[in-house]
View 1: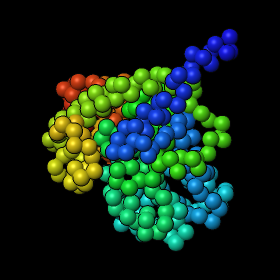
View 2: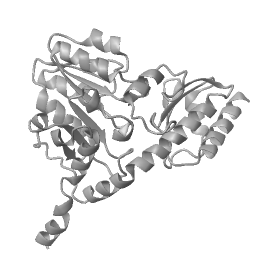
View 3: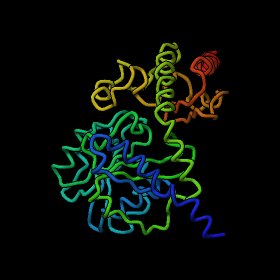
View 4: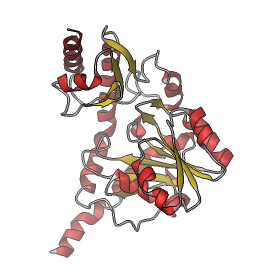
Length: 312
């Protein structure tokens, strides 16, 4: 029975990571490889443990818990900054910085990947980019100088928990596979199948996010809306430089940051449609929306109702 199970699973083994690598390295797919893991955290751990040693330094986003809670025990120091703020990253690097860990898209904006690449080369560091919120449909960091790209699979790539690392063959050969956290053979076929609809799914969600952001920005109870597709967004010009030249309105990601005049936590609690494929969480005084497949009219109506109720 065990041998039969292996025979059924074997054809899909490694093909999901290879499919992600083919998309991320579209400009030169023969130079790029991928490795999958059980979770996004396991993928990040593999990178950090493979390329950092005691006495080295890493610059990372503020919520990188693995960096904050684990690496210090092994003599790795860290500075935590908003990696969408290039001057802040520059100020944080040290002479012994060996890795800059950034996010293509985050709640604070768009990372200047080309600027981060130049900075990393100046100090002799690797540039590792988490592109979970972008996917290779929106942006391919390897084309802008990143050494390695990470994805957590459960948000956009597919509906199964997992992680994947993509990069040049010479770097991927150095990546540890000894964490005991491989992607489940039961999940790999489902994730591989989901890649067939990735472009359609991401473009649809991006289009909804664009319409949602533009509509909510007009509400009198909204102080600000952060979305790189909006011309007034600080990251708009940078996003146009870095992001894939897909159909207009479908190329700027699925994350929308709404800052209401009222209490952000109360706004989240008042929403009714959120929680199926669209998520909303409080981020300080703002609400971070990850847009899903709901009709944009329904999402806008739900947020409008919640904002109106706050206004009294």
